[in-house]
Length: 343
Ligand SMILES: Cc1cc2nc3c(=O)[nH]c(=O)nc-3n(C[C@H](O)[C@H](O)[C@H](O)COP(=O)(O)O)c2cc1C
Image (tube, rainbow, N blue to C red; front, top):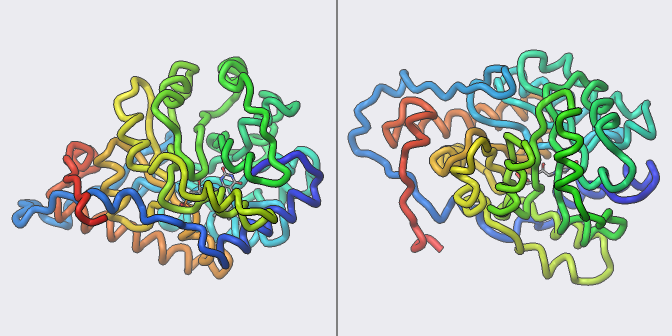
C-alpha cells in the first residue's frame, strides 16, 4: 500500500489496485473457514428473535461484529467510494477503515476523499498508514496528524512485507520496526490496530506486538484477496504469481494468536459471508472484516453497500441460531468441527 514515490504514482497505483481487484482473479484459494464447520444443532433450544449480535469497538456500539476493511482514498474515485462506505457503515451499524492516508501529508487537498466522519458519526472510523513508514521519515506526529485530519477513533497501521517486496516501487526496509513502534505507541493519541493485508500475522509476531503494547490486531491472512497476486499484474515477470497463495490462512492465524494475553483479534482475509464471521468468532476473533466484497458495491451506491452488510448480518444471525448461540459470547465458546474432507 505504500511505496517510495510521488503523489502521482500513489494515485495511479491506487487506481491500478481497484481495477486489478475488480477485473483479475486475485483470490487464488478458497477461504480457510471453509475447512471447518459450525456444530449445527437440530434443537438449538432458542428463539431466533432473541439473538443479540451487538458488540462494542473503540467505545462505540456495533449492530454486528464487522469492520469494513481499509481500501482507498486519494484519487478522484476515492471520495465516492468512501462516502458510500461511510453512509452504509452508519446505516448498518458497523465500523469503517479508510485506505492508506500517507498521501495527505504531502498533498493536503487529498484529505477531501477521506473526510467522511460526518456520514458515519455513530460508528468507529479508523485512519490508515503503513507501519513501514516509521523507517521512511514518519513518526508519532505524522500519525497523529493523520488521525486528527479525519477525527478518527483509531488508526490501522498496516504491515505488508510480501506486498512491498512484490510491488515494483515497494518500501522494503522493515528493519527495527518493533522497537520503533514501541517507542511511538505511547505518543499516539488514539488506539492503534496493526493489520496485515492478506498474508497473515504469525503467532510470534502477534506475541511480540502484544509485548510492545498493541491491544488489537487484524490478522488478515490468506484465503481472500492476495496482494502478491494484485501486484503480480503490475510487474513484467511471474514472481507475484509465484507468491500469490503464500502466507498464513486466516483461520490458522487466529488459532495461533488466540489466547495471547491482552490481545484482541480481528479476522480479515477471505471473510465472504456471515458463516465465515460466525466461525471467526468461534476461533477467537472479536470482530471480522472484509474488503473485496464491498469494492464493487462502493463504486455503485450506498444502498448497494448496505445490502451487502445487511445480508452478512442476517447470515450471521442464522448461523448463530443454528448453533444455539444467543450472544457473541456464547458463539465464542462454540467448538468448530474440522471438516478437512471438504477440501
Ligand atoms: C482495492 C483495495 C485497496 C486496499 N487498500 C488498502 C490500504 O490502503 N491499506 C490497507 O491497510 N489495506 C488495504 N487493502 C487490504 C484490505 O484492507 C484487506 O486487508 C485485504 O484486502 C484482505 O481482505 P479481503 O480478502 O476481504 O479483500 C485494500 C484492499 C482492496 C481490495
